[in-house]
Image (cartoon, rainbow, N blue to C red):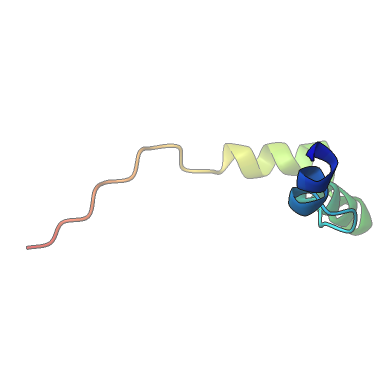
Length: 53
């Protein structure tokens, strides 16, 4: 029963997002310094709630 459920939820050919992003980053030559620059430029403030007036 567990094997059937696992096969339904986690099929063999599924796209693994982390692996796909890692492979794409390697192909374009993204470095740790590039990732740090992106993180440092990110706005970390909380978003203001929407107002409907």
